[in-house]
Length: 372
Picture (cartoon, one colour):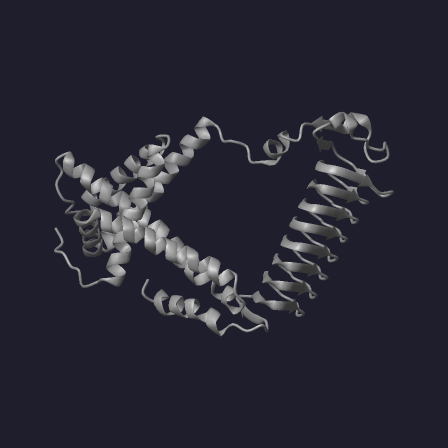
């Protein structure tokens, strides 16, 4: 992971060099652009990531578009999905996939070939939606056809002449009986009325059943156990050093893990709010993910070695012993996570202790112990 250090330090220093002018980086067919006023004026074969105060996309995007700013304007066609957020969002380019839009004033004036999700203070839809739509806001104006179902939550709704819902119209309101829907939009038999409080539950993810949760738990134990086994088998001396660091001073490891992850997450937010720095956000993001995964795997392995030691197996000296310790730690950590409240705190402790051992090892490599 040491190859990330120069990039991470460069990312932290980059905001000091940022200017008002836009910064554009193209990599792997994708385009990353940031600045106060940014315009994407060249066709993109991959995805677009653009952020700033005033952002515009005026050339076709073959992949997906990710746009964020005070003013967001899409004048080009998007081949796949669109994700846009801003105070004022104006979409006049067709979207080939799904569109997810949020902000204060949303104007959707081009066709959406997939599903539409839009939430804002004022939402205006004047172009057809080939899939279903979820619309939420204070004032919503619909003057287009929606081929699928529509979930609608608003204080006031204005139906235009072209408004039509081909599927089922779900209306969420504090006073559902007061909602009036013209017959040309949807007949009464295709209208379902709901209380506003049901909107979040209706549009949120469905809670998985017992067997689905059990399958996920077993999958997590297997993945963590395999990662721990592979790490201990490929780098036994390194893992033994991490384990002994964590057990020698667990509170220091816990604190260093918390500081390390906090620094990486904080740098992501900091870079995202500056001009040129946004193109370097992937660096601390990747580092945070690696530290997170590595910290949990190491923490679970340390727990497993401790548990097998208590059971009388002694220190792991072979690949088989290390595999037993890795899977034992993964299973114990997974079981602890099921305990309400206390389980969550214990899980965080396991994670931070493992991450802290990695941080100490990377930044204080002079601290050595002998492998057992």
